[in-house]
Length: 141
Image (tube, rainbow, N blue to C red; front, side, top):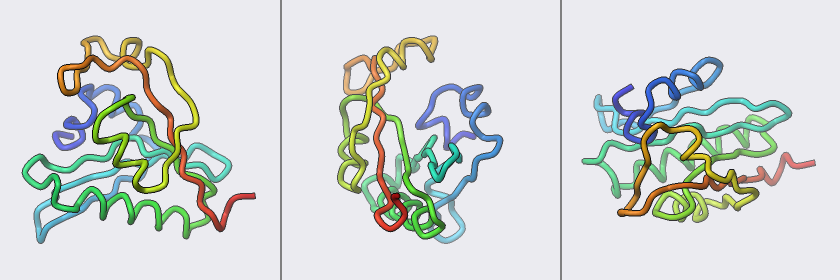
């Protein structure tokens, strides 16, 4: 839970999406350095609910390796698409776009409506969530 809280500050919110989800980890030897929670959304769609790397291990390739593994695993398992929600700016948006995710919608005021305290990144308050989708090329009908 401590690791997941680095990416989503509400433990109740994390607990709400854990049932029915799968959790994957990245490790360095015996040390868990990253985690990713993925939830099925029906009809061949899966959503990345949380992906996080320990601060001491960020910018070392663990997040990229974990995301690539998640994409390969679900696409090779027959998924049609993988979705994720993120803020409207910052390194997370570029991270997903580098891996083929495309913006498909905007959830206006998501962070204001769903979190009791304002969330800031680089001194700027988050308001809207961008919804991104990666279509699995061999499985799209």
